[in-house]
Length: 69
Image (cartoon, rainbow, N blue to C red; front, side):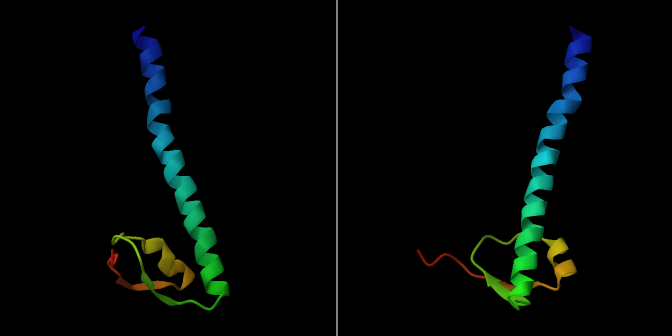
């Protein structure tokens, strides 16, 4: 039983990693679309997040705007 549980552990740890990779892939696609539209600097309607990878696409978040509601 312990051996079966041990084998299950790495798979459980891999699920969040796969989700993060999928999210980063989505950001990359969106970043490419923004660059094609000529966007380089942007104000973002969301909570502040550290997205260092977007600088590789020539994008910069200059401000996080609070939700007016």
